[in-house]
Amino acid sequence: MSPAKSSTIARKPHHTKVAPAQRMPPADLPRPSAYFGWKAVFDRTLAALLLAPGLPIIGLLVALVRLTSRGPGIFRQVRVGQHGRKFMMNKIRTMRSNAEAASGPVWTQHDDPRVTLVGRVLRKFHLDELPQLLNVVKGEMSLVGPRPERPEFVHVLSETIPNYQSRLAVRPGVTGLAQLNLPPDSDLHSVRRKLVLDCEYICQAGPWLDLRLFACTGLRMLKVPEGWSLRIFGLHRDVTVPMILEGPSGTGGNGGNGSNGGNGGNGGNGADHAVVTPTSIQAEIAHALTEVDGSPPGHQKHPGKRLDGGSGPSKPR
Image (tube, rainbow, N blue to C red; front, side, top):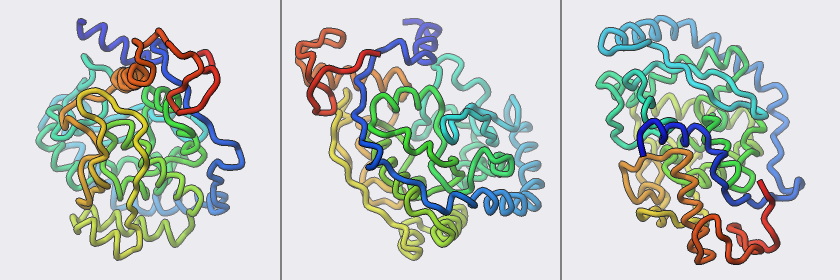
């Protein structure tokens, strides 16, 4: 398949059918804490104060990026915010220009070859996230909350993971409980583990929790060992969820708890350099359906059998 055709498929994930995810009753969905009623005022005020020393730093980093690689210094990308609203998220560019021209939307890999030399340093100290303070001031993001995902992935993950869209009940954050405890998403299992912590934060958010998460993020930028700082602030979480899907290339095991602080493996990703796209996620689901039914995707031998283990016919797409 030519790169152009691959890119077209990756950008139109709805062309591939996926199994509908089981939904919880409304009473069992995470209810946002009352703190979110006035959290935006706190976020915008603090973000505006941080921009005072932050803007000169952002300006210097943008100039450094432009001097060392072709392309703009600020990278803007569509993300999904509260209640599914799309917005343009700002970052300092850390990859070569047009990094997804041939592949379409993909998750960042471990030791991603698309990242520039300067970009590796910026990512190591999380300085590429500084322009997101502008998104916070505009009211599109929060300082603390679930990490915003790209619409191409949200479409597929919402079809696959039960109640994935519950994380869209609040504004996405620059940092958060899930981001500090777990490594970047690498497969469906890692997304499900992060969803557990996102829902915990949504239900239990408060000023004291935000203050601890913000302080821990600052220590992380200073490269203080994450395992130590998470435990000091009472933020360490061990997340274990049952495996549901077993995808190709050995993506089955959960690899321990896999937090950034070194508590386990890589969250079950069988290939450190596997490129994850919306299409590859759907291929993982199709593979699991084949394992369940013993028939190729698109030919369901047992129409009443669902991937989530329930009974009854699946809803048509």
